Amino acid sequence: MSQPAGPEIDRLIQLLAKLPGLGPRSARRAALKLIKDRRRLMAPLADALHAAAESISICGQCGNVDTSDPCHICADPRRDPSILCVVEDIADLWALERAKAFKGRYHVLGGVLSALDGVGPEELSFDALLARARVAEVGEVIIATSATVDGQTTAHYIKDRLAGCEVTVSRLAHGVPVGGELDYLDDGTLNAALTARRKL
Amino acid sequence: MEWTDQGIVLSVQAHGETSAIAEVLTDAHGRHKGLVRGGRGKRIVGVLQTGNEVACTWRARLSEHLGSFAIELKDARAARLMDNPLRLAGLTSLAATASMALPEREPHPSVYKAARAVLDAMEMAPPSSIAWVAGLVRWELGLLQELGFALDLSSCAATGQVDDLTFVSPRSGRAVNTEAAAPYVDKLLPLPGFLRPGQAVTADREQPHLVLKDIEDGLRLTGHFLDRYIFHGSNRPPPAARARFLEKIRRFRETYTGNHNI
Image 1 (cartoon, chains in turn green, blue):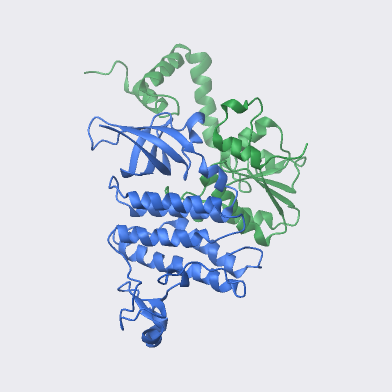
Image 2 (image 1 turned 90 degrees about the vertical axis):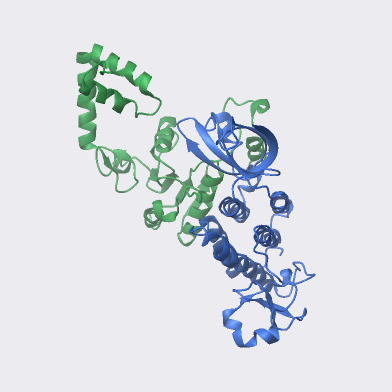
């Protein structure tokens, strides 16, 4: 059976279908939308993709993605260089930046230790973290890994590795989320919240 | 095909964007995998944590299919163990060892029940106690036995004596007493006191380092035979989580300050 469109459009649909959240059907819808709105949407999108692909680089200090190295966070003089926040991946860094709650600098590990997925310490940027933590100006390392078994195993591993550095090691609290009702919380979260209770 | 069982979550791997493949050590169906639809969602990700006890219903059209799991939380054990680095390392070591050593879909109810008992002991022990590690060593010995590689620690391989057993032959897995072991001490594996017939972990207040050394020796002993009979046999490296746990115990012994009960 012949294709309903030329090979260029077919390739566009195939590539769009590889994006998260899109399957072949939704990729076809997205492609049709782009084709219908070629001037206003397709051309600018193509330009933006091209420009991003040309200029994106991984920050040599923290592992963030940006168009400059060091990234704008590491290069920002208003950021507190004495606090490092260790996150699993870039999505976590972006989440913390969205919250506007942290004014220090970051370190992206690139994942978590996982025995079953074969992710060992060599695959993650622990050595770079250690080198950064040894710098005299760093006074605290906040470990912001997930509240999962793998995330916490990684957190304990980082704490062990930082044992020789003169830094305070802390981690994010686990417990009741803002707007959360106790009745709807799972047993594990309630347990963590009770364990981490603090004086009013 | 459909069955319902209880089990301990061993591992979870992402499958597509929203689902996950859960691996559960069940009571009557052994180590079993199944697809959990929506298994990466907020509602269930907390349930699918290594060490949690769950009730699971497995369904498939044919028995050889991967099938799907409907999983319900029975006990959120993982959350209670996460804060203690040694216990968390012990939990992941147990899960990784079970995952790599046990054949899939082969019932081993005694391994499941013993694993539950070890996790119970791990959880119930006072915060500063590490006596539960001896239970983990015994669980690994039981695992070897269940898989057909039992060690004979009841009498000396050379003399048949039942007293003064202090070593284990790395080849035969049989105990050796001090006298018979004398010429081969550097080639034999130390037999920890708590694995000698009729002995348990005893808190030696005078020499706590010796008890810690015993526990470390126990892990090295089972590790040797797990490597030899199970992991090398299937051309797989031993689980990294177990190596990290052993390393933690070694460092714990080296830095022991007397603040922990043994």
